[in-house]
Length: 189
Image (tube, rainbow, N blue to C red; front, top):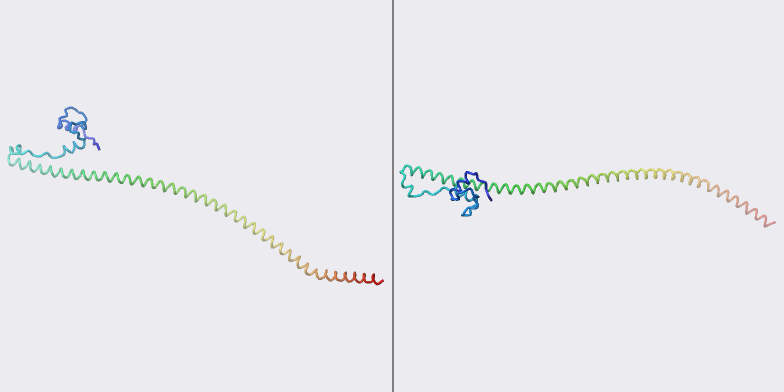
């Protein structure tokens, strides 16, 4: 991963590494990346003993104190860089999870739309079938009322036939007897 450094830092890096001109730092003789060079410069340099001995005790104590502060700051920076790296990893992780959620939500929305369309179609079909059912019920009611009327008419006719049948029978028997008597007389004479 390459980091963008300000031009002043790049110039300083070139001078420290004796690169001379402003050639890209990643072409340096040691083959270090920009981030590695930045980390190299960020480290606290060791105090050289022969230079330290030339200072007074008070200056040495102040320098040692500053050196300890610089080391503490370096540890804090390293810890912060670690936290930043963890935060970046978390951001990448949550970004990936968010994309998965967005994809899942779009799938759910598509499925919901399909189901909604199916429900609307089923409602239309149910209404159509309900109307057909009501029409059939009305037709059955009409047929039932006609059947009731025809049954009543049939019963009236049947009652009339039942009442009239014995009379016809009696008439028929009377006519038959007359016919038999007539034939008998013809035979006798």
